[in-house]
Image 1 (cartoon, helix red, strand yellow):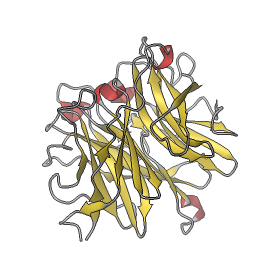
Image 2: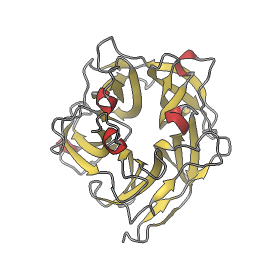
Image 3: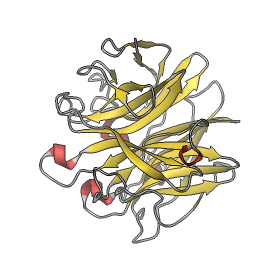
Image 4: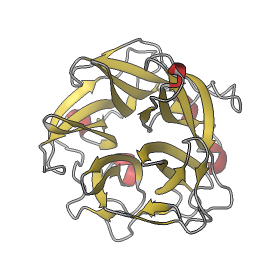
Length: 331
């Protein structure tokens, strides 16, 4: 019988709220992505300023103190005027390829096209994981690569990269990401439609074989509008995924879990039984939504970083899970 996690929130949430004294992250701290480094944790995230721009920032915490962060400011600024990332750099995903750190991020060009204003995932590189420079001024991944949506433009990250040493060299790395197919419309199901996808690479630079792996479920009220931000990790012989659903139940994001034997075909169970983290009406920082998960493995369980109300307007929080609960209909 397959299982899923239920999370115990940190009583000190949010662990990284916006700081009104820091212009570049005075209005939002969103899209956490956490890696373990020699100094402890590195938390990559997107900070928002008073003019509405978003940049990639970083904070660190010492080993044994994952909720006590020191901010280090911007590590990747917005792009040049007219570029695909001229207005926003959001949704960081960081992985080391040999001696080089890769930072993938989603760009917003500054137009008013809704989800179609996110025309690509960019790549920045670094020798130390701290000081990054753009690999190219053009996006590395675009939103027109799946067979189902060949004319689409919108694409966002929000996922993870896994290495499969047993795969063909061209498929050694898998990137899980969000395909944003929504177009401006009064119907939120059209306006906010998103799917989870995967693509493959041998070098972390050139990505191919884009496939859809998860879509909205029109009969499940917490994810009948969109699914996004697929965070995937290995658990023994299984693949596990935390993902965000937008649904008419709350009107905003909640976090659910799916399981898979191959990382492509996913089981979510029946209805909403795979819900892992939902908005908390009693909390001033996450009463509206919970979204953009990032998971890191600890010796005694899993640590989850996520953001709350207003897409990070209240900051980034943390939760912990020691065990996984059964999903009765997946066996």
